[in-house]
Length: 261
Image 1 (cartoon, one colour):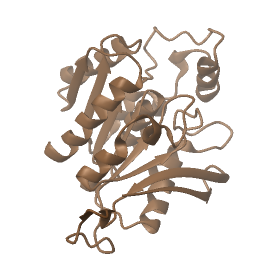
Image 2 (cartoon, helix red, strand yellow; image 1 turned 90 degrees about the vertical axis):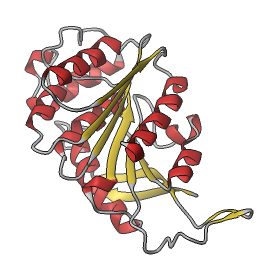
Image 3 (cartoon, one colour; image 1 turned 45 degrees about the vertical axis):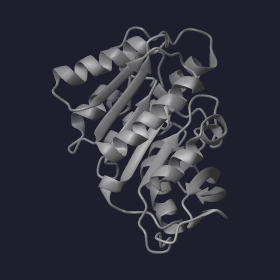
Image 4 (tube, helix red, strand yellow; image 1 turned 180 degrees about the horizontal axis):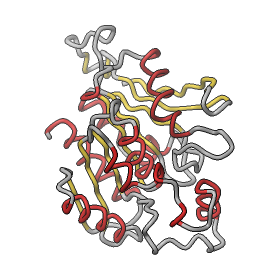
């Protein structure tokens, strides 16, 4: 496997942006040479994997055995920096949603031998990145065939559990993105439930949450709503908190689900 860090000028974000990538190579080690893989001609399955709040493009590589997992499944993984953006378009013109759903996909397909098929293109993330995967996976449902959402923040305008008046950085950022202190004023394009309902072609969906996670109730509520609406999805809950121990376990489950579903 090759692990790369790449910087390019983003039209949607109007600045240089950086992402990490895990790319299969024929040479895994001096003792394990893969003579069957023609790297130049293979259209690789690709997972666009998003970090959580206060993280960056290196999080998944540093905190999990993702490189080994990608090697096992011959999977390309593209990891941009989320910049505490919630991966949505902002009032100031920083179009993180379009960056994730359109520009990053187009740029990486030009740089690497990736499959352009919907069924080979996936998006996933944890916490804030889980929300970004849920939202953008359904808004750009013609691009992404599968969505992985781990310990997700589930933004929903009818969820009264969010109190944006609390003086903390996350709620300040949410107030800015929503252009309001009130979740009831949230634009439909930011509401997870609304974007799922409106997706003409719904991607396959994998949800996972720890039972000790502070986001447990909103993830369980989403699962219950999906069942009520007869929207097919895989739901996994297990003992665990909002931490890398849980995400190490569930990213393995999620990648196995991609290939075995």
